[in-house]
Image (cartoon, rainbow, N blue to C red; front, side, top):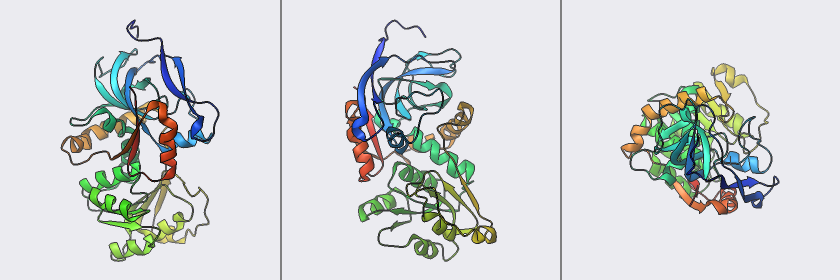
Length: 335
């Protein structure tokens, strides 16, 4: 990469000292250099995700070698190529999954983790794709083996992960039931393709699942809550059901009776994505390009954008994320 037209420095958001949203501070940093197999993206928009909040609080440090700048997904234009970066050219419009560095004017990304911005989407919408779409595909379809004709329970249906999971699964022939925290969020989930949305503040989702499935239980559960949901999830699964945990908003510890796990031959699993190698994420990218990108371009799946903030207002975006008032994704825009 040697492009004299590119600036030597950029504006970005750093975590000055771990803490509250005001810990996110605009600063100037040297321009990132794309390593072997990477491209440099001029960022037009960057998605906000809960791991960013955990990192800001000091609870989720970036993996070795990753940028300390928060941000796990970006959309923009390729402006430089590292050695061995294949399949992309300068000027290509892409969205990318990254291990950090997204809250910035420029971001280095592995070429294998870049996908074309789907036809019909702008950069803001594209920036809302990578983190949630990679996570949902990897956990529901690769790990849990979710198949057409099965039933899926999605907790947190109005979140970025939830709105993504509901749409992809329902479009691929899966019956979806979900939980959300109020009537507005439940209505939004049904509008996205859930057959039933349970207001968890007013209803017991275990009983709702039994009614929805005529007592059988669901085949797969995608959970980001943990805590006392773990035992209740086990109760909600059908024989040979699969529980996938991707976060623990209520904590990772619970007292669990494992007898139903044995009797129903259940699989309990979970994963994190950020530290996985590029080759692993590249396989997910290929699967998304084949199976999901056509659904986006046909208008059958679309990221749900709740709000956008300029890069300099990243702290306000985090306050909204932590309030839980949003439906779908929050995105930073880069002037």
